[in-house]
Image (cartoon, rainbow, N blue to C red):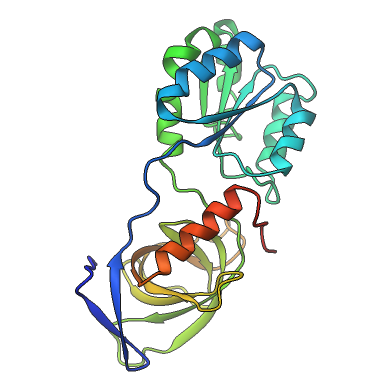
Length: 262
């Protein structure tokens, strides 16, 4: 469903102009480098300089947890083996539901002779493996697909949805599981078919009025692998000012000024 600034929809008999969802502009991201020696850190900085990514370093696992407690990182580059914790235990901690970095990209950095061992953690918390010897020339390329994924905020917020295109058009209040600039995962009492078009009102903290817009259902939760019935929606358009308000909340979360809501 493509929306343009000229398209108007009814909201309690008041016309609301929608603009297309755009998301964040390209920008540098926050990286956490864990357990790597000084030379490797320098090569990471050199490799991501052109992309404008900002690098924070942690000497070992405990230092990484302290750094992550102060704000979310978009990706982690983690030495294997890692000082202060076994690799498997560190990955489990990073992917814990309460971890601020549970959805961050994670790259294991290992010597070439340990590459196969490190690859055993792919799908178990690690997304990629990068050889130490290839860091400077390979790190930007390895990170690119991981950073393309929208930042998902573990925010539980009330959201009111209304199915478009049917006679009833009843509104249902549900709860977000996570939210990004592009969409949200919603815990809902009733499942909806993929492709269903919705109107939504998202109630953000510290914002007096809800963010309004339209969305489309892009997936349903998988029974057995996810612990709640729900749907994933993609935002297709926002009422005036709505996307800016959402961007401000995302930026505040990433900077540590807004904490997850449980």
